[in-house]
Amino acid sequence: MNGRLAVVAAARGGWFGRSDAIEAGYSDAEIAQRVRAGRWTRLCRGAYAEADAGVWSMPPWEREAWMHTRVAKAYFRRLNGRAVISHQSALVLHGLEISDLDLRRVHLTNLSGPGRSGRRVCQHVAEPPISAVVSIGEVQLTSGPRAVIETIHSTSYPVAVSVVDAALRERLATADELFESVRLFGRRRGVLAAARAVAFGDGLSESVGESRMRVLLADLGLPEPTLQAVITDRSGGFVARVDFLLAAYGVVVEFDGTGKYAGREALVAEKLREDRIRELGYEVVRATWSDLSSPTAFATRLHRAIDRATPSWSRY
Image (cartoon, rainbow, N blue to C red):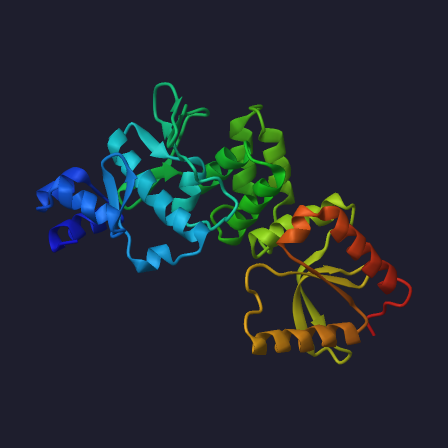
């Protein structure tokens, strides 16, 4: 990309249009050649972004979010002030990293007029009316609290909880702000479920996986766990910080996401850490993504750990 086009792309937040490339000296044939070579990627009709090796080496979710932000910015410019970026598209632009969001379509809300949907974009009616917008660079989007409720009233409950947890963790919204947004949406479809997710939300969940595990533990009828609990030894010395502590049972649940303990040294250190926890009388149950899709098998393992721990468990 030459310097002239690079300046335009930077000002737009990482994308440029066909007309920008033509004005910068590229022909349609040169644009097509760069797309075929993987140097540029086509975002939508007439919009492109430069995609270097770093983009193609990103984890799938990060690459999808990278693409989505640029597609959203391109559509926002195309609509020329008639709409603002909203729903999950706004959440991505607000900086939330939630790997189970559906980013197949860009979401915008029309400031006036009817909604419409297509394969790549969904334009919503502004109901309730948008009272304030947030500007990030050259684009405008719905506020964090509103974007959360816009998104979660039409998702599954586990996804809704992961969104709420992330918003609280990243301070995109407070619980009070989320409840106020729930009230604004009134009796619309899915709002009661959204309110449940807000009430259940906890910013101490450090990942989507931990949020989903918290939902599963609640579904199993277990008491609310302590999140990011600190385990100490008999003299009060620090031993570990654990994802979930079921204190009434003396059971620790650790959720292992992608590569949490990569490398031999890290694995050895984690084994020693877990041994120290067990020496204090706790049972440790490890969970992965596969357990979230096989809850019955996980419940069996967890209840066996509870049975082992309950008769003899003592912190000291």
